[in-house]
Image (cartoon, rainbow, N blue to C red; front, top):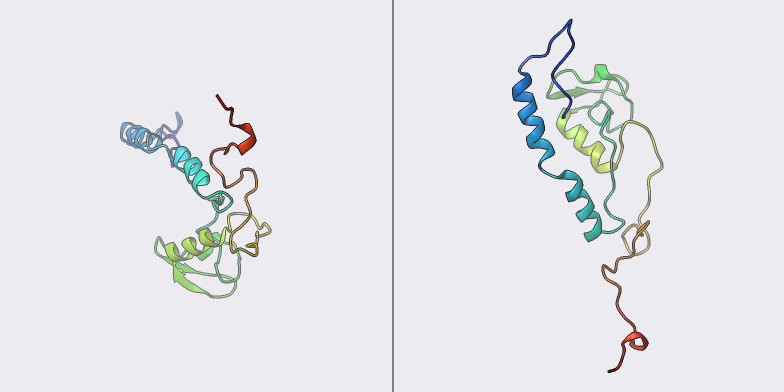
Amino acid sequence: MTRSARGSTEQPGRQVRQKAGLNRAILAQGWGLLRRRTGHKAPGRVEDVPAPYTSLRCSACGWIDKNSRKSQAEFVCSFCGFTCNADTNAAINVAAGQGGFPRPRRTAGAGGTTPPEQRSNVREPQPSQGEIPLI
């Protein structure tokens, strides 16, 4: 989304100043900080989904083809014939965690949540009774 609109000497870009302002506004929102804080609040339940091809992948069969995207709003799978709104199809793919390449899905544990990978669910270490110094 924040790619430069400058272009090249053969094909110069259009509306470069407006695009630069839009890039600054997008980058100033701090999406990385939001992602990190959400991960702290819900450890093990926040998953990064790779964005490429989420709007080109069929949510019914998984086939990826650029010809399936008939228009900005229409998605018709060229393999199985599944028809859906393009944004709805992409949202289903993002919710399923399917980006541009197939990968194994993590399953929920017995408690209904995915176990954390790196951090425990305790935000601050709690001192045990033996560690509190008596004055």
